Image (cartoon, protein in one colour):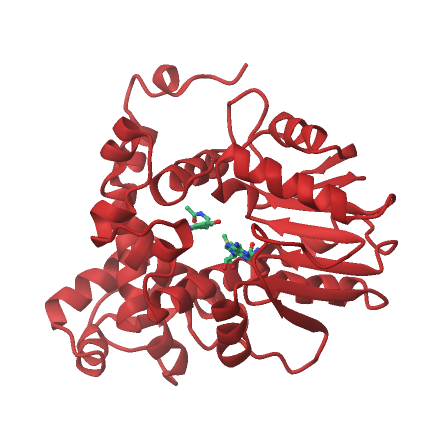
Amino acid sequence: MAELLSQSELDYPFKLLEYFNGFRLSKVIFSACELGVFDLLLKAPEPLSAQQVALQLNASEDGMERLLDALVGMEVLEVSPEDGTALYSSSDVANLYLARSSSKSLHDMIVYQSQTVYPLWSHLVDAVREGKNQNEKTFGLQPEELFKAVYRSEDEMLKFMGLMNSSWILDGHDIATAFNLSCFHKILDLGGCTGALAREMAKAYPASGVSVLDLPQVVEAARKHFPQDDDSVEFLSGDFFSGDVPPADLYVLARIVHDWPEEKCLSLLRKLHDACRPGGGVLLVEALLLESRRGPVTAQIFSLNMLVQMEGRERPPSGYTRLLSAAGFQDVQVCRTGKSYDAILALR
Ligand code: SAM
Ligand code: ASE
């Protein structure tokens, strides 16, 4: 059995200190992204002093120097020389993932964590006490429906779409190829948002037709703000809770089941079971917990996030098998990718 934290840390609680200081490390990354530090360092032809960075980003020299030094300590930036004026430059990782202009940029994910998730998490104590999300307390709204809160303004909807879009930069290919899905000729990604995962599916299965169904305002914004050069994915407006879903061989539900209470998930899965032909199926994409409850900590943190922001939870494989069986699906297969998100395939 793995040694418990409380035993290995008795001499000096290194991990414990790292955990409870962690929020400040998050804020260092958030702030540097929002100030444009990584974009400036990527563009600069040579390393810059704190004074130069501060001047170009409209910040104080003292504040910027401390922020840059913290980023060096976190091994996100590099500094030289050891004496004289310190000159800062980006690392390959920062250029690839933190600069806005990179094709693998996680900037949108970071902005959403900073501006929406972080304020919500300041009410974690209340969320745990009350057992419900903190949208009302955090943003001063009383919407009757969950996505009226998530999409409380056009700007919030676009930021949320940016978050959803950027996850598949990292995990999209692994999810699309977790199972061989080439036998499903018509694939429909329900709540497919910007189409980022659907595009990975279209790339992996060029002989299949891939469509996205989402709420009308999301489809409109996806077309306008997240356009695609190819026409590999078709967009449909609709509501997966009310009325029929279009026919398909494979229904994809990526990060949908974890948003909603059990009864809503069951009725959606039953509807999909009725809509799909024998041999058809459903692919769930979620961050799987371990049956042992011992991790992965990222999925456990996501489950707390679902408490703080949504109405659902993360589950271990048995949780999904139970839901899928109750809806009538069979042959449940689970694929852990080792990244943030995993795949569960079930057949009618
Ligand atoms: N599947 C995408 C992904 O994993 O990146 C997005 C997941 S996001 C958590 C939930 C998505 O479901 C959003 O795009 C939202 O607009 C959509 N959605 C919420 N309620 C819906 C409904 N009643 N009908 C269709 N789509 C809905
Ligand atoms: C959802 C996923 C997310 C609904 C709201 C969300 C995420 C953040 N807010 O389906 C992404 C994953 N979770 C975290 C904590 O980053």
